[in-house]
Figure 1 (cartoon, rainbow over the protein chains, first blue to last red):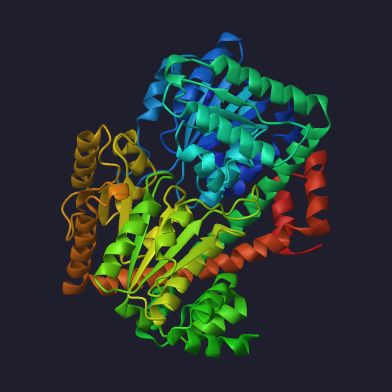
Figure 2: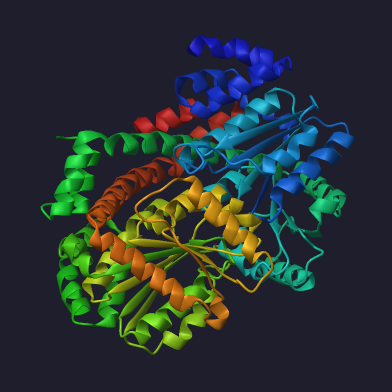
Length: 315
Length: 315
């Protein structure tokens, strides 16, 4: 039903939350319907909105920090959307509650929209859908879009990076910043939040982070390191100030266009990869795949030959 | 130089560590050379070796635990190889030291082979290369292959899963197991290690883990939960016993063939995806890509049209 996209887009832009939720589902599913919906939204629409990626290891306190940021943005009169990128778990048959529950204080606020994006299927699809969902939310009038994701896998890091400002959340004593570096988080952070700052090891972690950031040499924007205790709302105003300062820095220089063009490039790349990954899924299923696997297990073929046979699509 | 693979394979099998290291580099690089090298190694060679995946969040203590397991396996007279799957960091121009340094006590032991696999390029390549590297190590006579990886991203979880026994490492109070469930680690663990068991919250974490594992219902092997303090070598013998018990359970039932066939299927799937991902990288580079990105940024095209143009390979 590609024809149904345009009315959904109109309704979502008028503030219809049900239409917005349906539109996001269309965009998440991808394919022709998503294409139709997104073609109705000029890319430049997103210009009015600011996307903030919030990433870090599991348990770093990203959800609580996001929750507090929403509160402060609301207090400033802003409309806020949250995209929570959660790995779904076949163990429980779906995404696990928990963090989401804490967000309930915003559940009745019509100027807050929270969306949990499950990693159904492959992450490539999520890397494609997340910026598209952000564009839909921008079109629906949300001026701040917070994208929360676990920042350890490469794809998750890419999702967080597809933001105007990327906040990396670490904890004191969390492997003294080395773990963050190992996960590739130092390169992508525009702002660092050392959360749970009431814990031991704060000074060492802040020191290590700053030292590692300085190692990379001077640049137009040196990422600040902000100490927060999200559960007590401590340092969150300072964190939001740092995000706003980064925004001002990008807007006042010519770097915003550069960042946004990089984001468009990432989005196109994710779309291409998504198409090819679906192709791989098709190749690697069904009786033909089973036969080839059996041949390798029997020792009558090898994985490379099997992969080539499958990729060529020949019988 | 595809012709150079066979002598390297022979030398590696004779115990030549330099040849083994070169062979692993060939396999990591992929392509025709890897194909030639691997075709010289029957898949069934791996039957004598046991691959143990060790995964968990950053900072859970996986490296220290791996180090202690190596010590106990060596004490039992086993030859051991370690594949450490580390995200490389463009920030430092390469993989960061740290954990690796701790392994130095095995550096002069000729029956221990440690290999750090960097995530250069895309993770799809790593998902392909890791089981292949394990096969090479098995052919070189290492009877135990420990694969250490950060278990948060989907691909990293898949890498750990491509093992005969998967050990999931969590910490007390680490989001009381819910974080592990969110990362999809509960489904893949054959053995759970609650490491840093001297910390507060141990009983609750062990209880939560067991409760969540029981939720999934009865099955041929119920994953045991072992308490460890890797830094003091506490509980590591029990962990190794649990790994050996899982091995016995698989070998004594008909499930080993099933597990190994699943692994072959995963390897073929990774090879297919790797080929397609390289194709995506080719599509999304060069002046043609830059032109298309510029068109989307200008508003004269949209990401879907751009992706279709690139995927079709037409000008």
